[in-house]
Image (cartoon, rainbow, N blue to C red; front, side, top):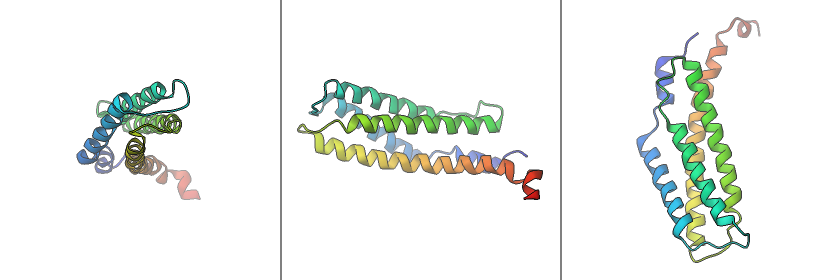
Length: 149
């Protein structure tokens, strides 16, 4: 059974205010990772943080990509879920890199900005993963096996 077309479209209707906010916050974090006074006792930690933040932005961009060109609805949803999982993995790696920071004139502000971005990003991810998960589950709700249970 195909997906409900309205439900499918709604799952890919990313709120423009939320996406703009996430992009702006991410850009500020990248700017701070390059130009702010951030310190750590671990050699190479700040360049690693920059790399992880860049990957995080690339994975956010991937999740937001238009998938309307994919002809099969199920594959469109599965691709979006895979992008979301990659984004989560990237966030975890960025978390590990950020935990190595421990000082500098801009550390407290950077930490607060990062945690606020992280919270907003997770809420965004969880919302869309729920929508996509519900869509995939709907494929199995009407199956003959479900009626036997």
